[in-house]
Length: 341
Image 1: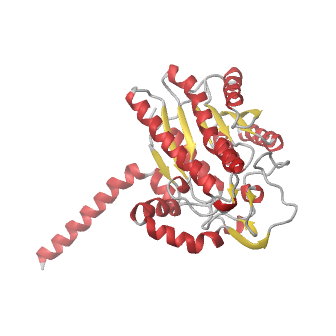
Image 2 (image 1 turned 90 degrees about the horizontal axis):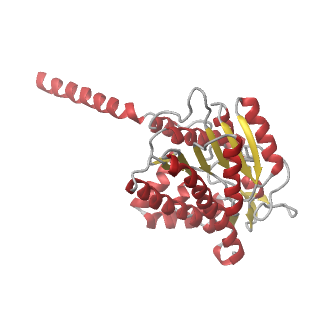
Image 3 (image 1 turned 120 degrees about the vertical axis):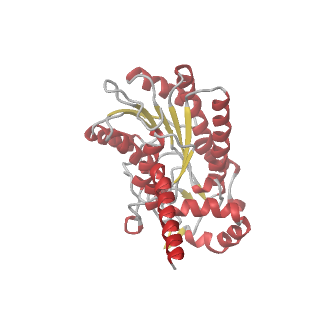
């Protein structure tokens, strides 16, 4: 399965994407649609799902719209059955759905922690279980967990979300080890992403005085979708996307105390704008915000549209030997020069 698509000339890939109605999930659906995949689109917001389904059809794929809350394990299992009944055996399952709350820990409620955990963490568990029930007997398939730099490095004001992403990381490591032990050909991978220009910052529940924003630098969601598409088709244990993700994860391993201090000084201002929050602002913690919100948020002018780091990561197979060759040539030149002198 390494380095090649699961589809055959006679059968498109069958893909499930959770959180597909908007943001990164919407961008992921578009990316797979361009490959001709048949895609089950799962999310709570019907307006966004219907629009995503139309986009998939236009881009060359086929869509199955399934409105549901991934916090409902029975609903997720039903979606898996419906997908295979409509399209056939699932090849790739992408766990992307999430909710968050921007708030100091001291102001959070138990119900809010429970809700974020049920959607952002347990939704991944339920999706993974549904995928495994089908993939393990066939001994094939890929499960992609959409992660974050925050899966390794927690930041202030997003404790519930950071904890859920940490939990996904631990869950995925345990599952991967079990699959290796069982000599299974089912593969799991996790894509750790930087801040994305998605609509979630317009509807995330927040107690901040300023409008929520992603921590700069901000990337367009197509960067994340490109990484997820690549991870689904290539043997990668894990992928870091964007230099900020590498910096956050590696930096926390080297100097976690400095990260604590830096975030204490800068983490509050970095996550909110100078504009005050609208008094009638709606959030999507318990119910979806009606309407089609698309893939992009309101930070287009700040958003980065390419990632040299992701390009290098995708091409490391030939970049590493090329770099070694270049280093050898340079060393040989220096030795020859020194000898001639």
